Length: 385
Image 1: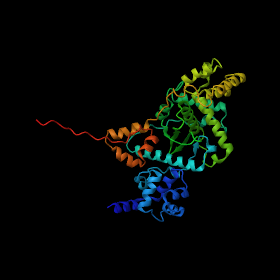
Image 2: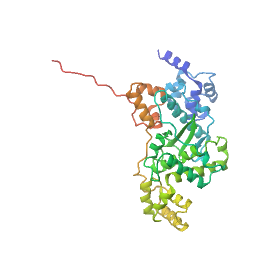
Image 3: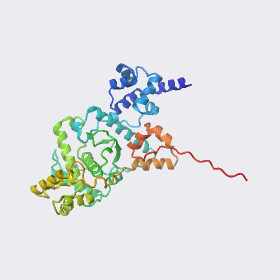
Image 4: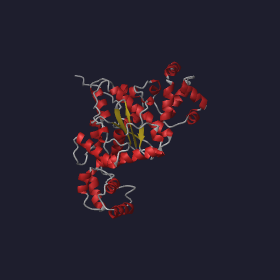
């Protein structure tokens, strides 16, 4: 019986899914072959479909790569793996190709679930306006970026005040946000347009609310200003440095609108900036950069603030980092609960559709731990008369 069951699995295995699983775990063919006890050539043949792993080797692959068996014979709803749209990686210069490919695959999983959800649910539409009319220069100046940030705030009716919850604002306006454990200090976030939808993938590793908000605003800048940039363009260091500077400047301009923030900077005291951080939910270091770039403070005042940051070790960890709460995306949670509440699917069916282990699915789709656990329904017992 077990042998027949395993052979049935072997027939269903999709070769490309074997490669997808390996790349997602950041393993080379040689590394995987060593762990499961076959040659690299055998792994290549499995992934090309010229031969199938035995049931024993298949179960070893499942164990080593930590995927449910359903992953290897499920077809993705998304075709994002073949998309030519650029992926904007935060800290792009220090990320290995292997790591980039692993996280592009995770993007594919997010996009696949969005495609599935859209069959049943009307998700928020993207409301990002086209800012091409604001500038005709090839490289937008800082003044132009200030104008873009200001226009977006007006378009979204945000005024000039601090944004209470940036995740909520972006989700309401059709930007899809997910979080993953990058497991690497070299990567903070990445973003991408795909099929007319904007995506931002954040890391969970740093667990800093203000840093996460700045990453969000940075990636929003990429999505707005760099749709015309191709993946090949990003291999050019000059282009990469330029768009990173533009995205950073946009993030500062969007989170700290010049007129209001300028009026609130009353002192170059580090304690004053701690108070500002609590109100604006932006790091002290980012506010100092904003004051420098926008000439809000003098050079001497900036130097003094930087010396205070070094003296108190604030460049490693700032005050309030453990107080300001990280904003959590909730789109997937609401959408999946809607399907469950209306009995469109069961939790087990959802997990089969997602085809990831439950812990990974809960992290990727910002669900609470244990979301996919199904409790036992108690029997209705009564005393005998």
